[in-house]
Image (cartoon, rainbow, N blue to C red; front, side, top):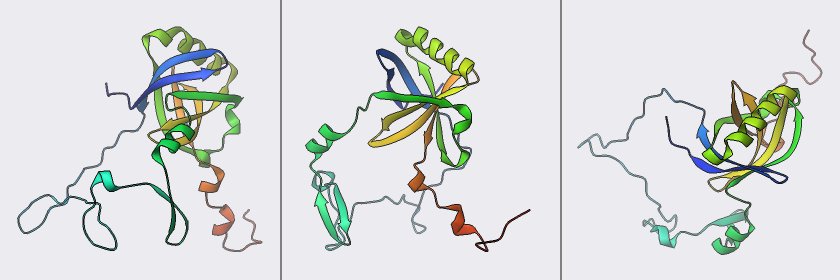
Length: 184
């Protein structure tokens, strides 16, 4: 079995269920390396300063937000840590009908398994979602990015599917060949 990529808990109300998160995807692709064709040495990526052309050490790298072309606001890492949401919790916000989530919003699936302390709560939540045909809508942070997700029972395990926000999808109208054309 693979290693969990995240450990934390599912929380809603006064309920807290310790869980482990695993990627549900499996890649069958071949992984290639980049080599210098002259001597077959591996090629590595570096952080290069655009102006000087010189490498930059990690300790000299800062995060910034580009608010307009070539104008940045530097981000204070300590302020960012204090403002970011909980990194160890899947916060259930509400429960909706399974059929209310449209396919284009489904992004990336993960399996959740219980830690030993969470087995009873996990089983109860899994059974409840299955019986009611509901999906838990949750927020969580993976790595440093906040996500919205759907928590659903799937083949006797909890599946957490990251959802896309509406602004991450192109509008179907962009692809219509004729604005008024109706397909029969």
